[in-house]
Length: 218
Ligand code: E4P
Image 1: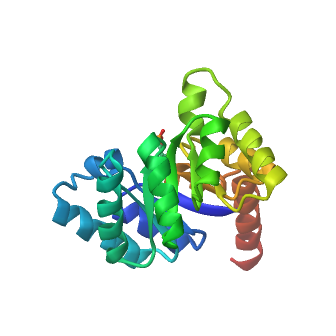
Image 2 (image 1 turned 45 degrees about the horizontal axis):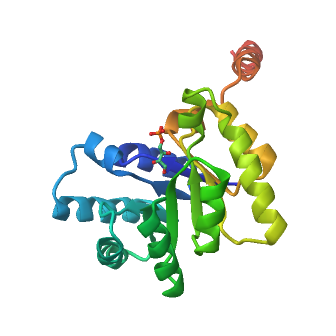
Image 3 (image 1 turned 180 degrees about the vertical axis):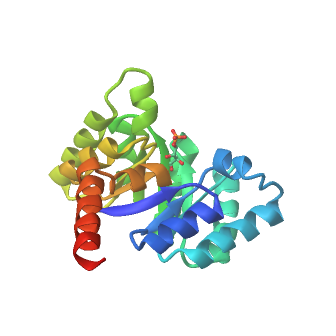
């Protein structure tokens, strides 16, 4: 399972990279705004800075909602770095843009996926990744993990190569549930990734090992 971090914060990306488990980064306009990155030039520079840290795919989202605009923006984004994956919203012109970019060999991430039907369309249009938002579904009392399972079943039935990128991950259980189902990728905050390494018995066990060592070596 690939681990992507869902942030535009360079420090967090660097920290996840140094942990040695980072396979890529996803961003979105809200995450860029949260870091105070505004204006086209600054946004493009920030994507480059992210690409310089991470060994792997970096999703950069288009703002346009019409086909022509999405194509223009996507073509500019892929000029930044070969790691850039063009993130496209699941709307009608977005499906057309996925098809266009897949025909050009440009990698895409279809975002804002909330149903299996949307994921099926994105795969048929040749998306490299689909991003079902599991946390936002859970937020409205709908089972986000069940959607991951449904999409994986459909893709396996027909051998679609589109990778299921479980997005809007909120906590370590989401990561484990996605891993059990065989999701290709998960993207979440650094806190969810770091929570995987925590266990109280590890802390208690380590404290005991170290105190026993001190007793014998002091
Ligand atoms: C996906 O690529 C999105 O950036 C993201 O996972 C959204 O997560 P949120 O629901 O925590 O904002």
